[in-house]
Image 1 (tube, helix red, strand yellow):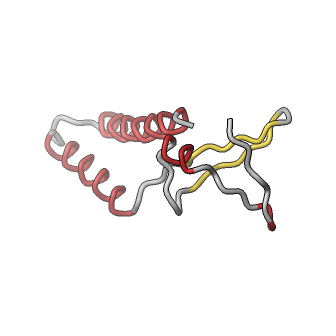
Image 2 (cartoon, helix red, strand yellow; image 1 turned 90 degrees about the horizontal axis):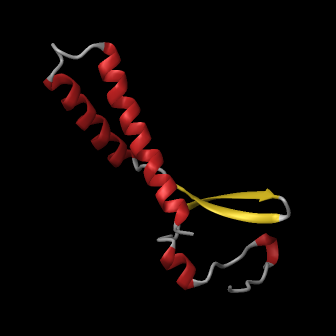
Length: 97
């Protein structure tokens, strides 16, 4: 387990091998928690505006394709499924650390 040094202003540098394993890149967001005497870092998965637009367009296409057959509940389920997919991606990335 690598040991890192706390720098001026509270900054730390994560070792390259750890960043690579966690698939972290410069500019990525990381949630920091302090629980039970431990500091935990968790990557925060966000979608770029382009990715969000693409996913929303795909959902709209899906809902319009069967629009005459889809109720509001069906469309809401599609949105819920997409939210679950994004959250699953986030959990998968968090477990890599």
